[in-house]
Amino acid sequence: MAYTIENFKTKKALKEAVKEEKEVRCYNPGLGPDLTYHTGTVYLEGPHYPEPHKWYAQGILKEGVLVKVK
Image (tube, rainbow, N blue to C red; front, side, top):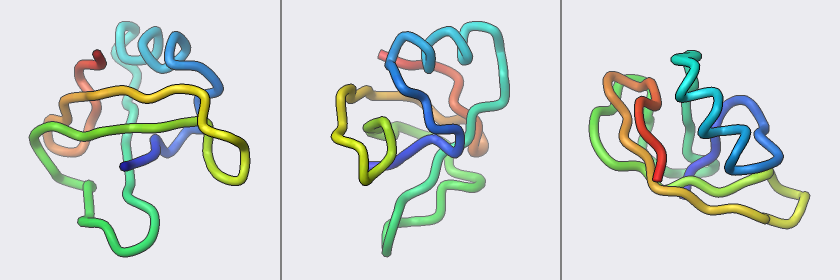
C-alpha cells in the first residue's frame, strides 16, 4: 500500500484533486518500490499513519503522477 505525498483526509478530496488535474504524487513507506517515475496501478490508503486509515483506493500513475482514482 502507498500514500499520497499530500495527506488527504478523505477519498473524495483525493478524487477532486485528481479531477482538477493537480499533480498528486505517491510514495511507498518503508522498503516499497520508488514511485517517482512509475507508470501503472497503485493501491493507496489514507489518511497517513499514525491516524487510522479511513479510505482505500486503486489508482493509475503515469510517470509518477496520479491520473485516475477508483
